[in-house]
Image (tube, rainbow, N blue to C red; front, side):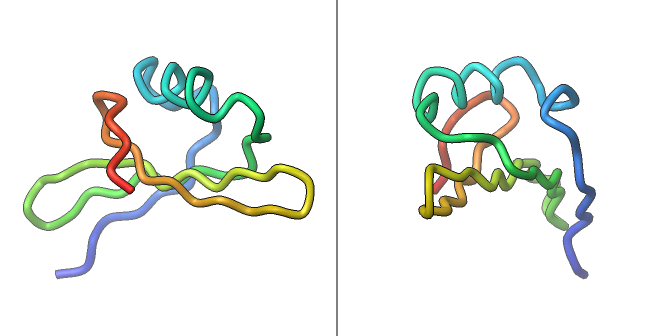
Length: 68
């Protein structure tokens, strides 16, 4: 079964996820986020960030924990 995926705006992210972005990635600009729910029920957000010519993708759990 494929994971459920949905594009979300930054203002739709859980407070814990936004807090992690503000605390750990403040030098980056938010580009895009995807809500992902895996078949086992795991939920996380894949966040695309930019800083100049550098693109970064980070996965953050709904509790704000950086997964990768």
